[in-house]
Image (cartoon, rainbow, N blue to C red; front, side, top):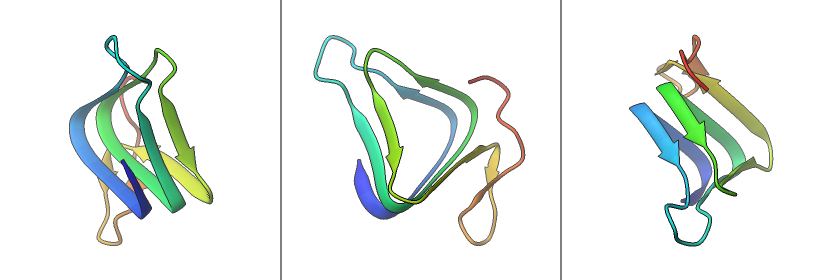
Length: 71
């Protein structure tokens, strides 16, 4: 997944290869992930050319706020 400002909002974000090529979630300017649980493993990549925020919810501007329960 790639874009300028990437916003993910889910209960669980699982970014792992699962026997395939390592997945990438990347943003040119900002990456916001709102999740109760976030797993990034098996060579997977979370990348932002600017800001990267992890929280529990997205606010009205699409920015992650609060705290995820499990990283």
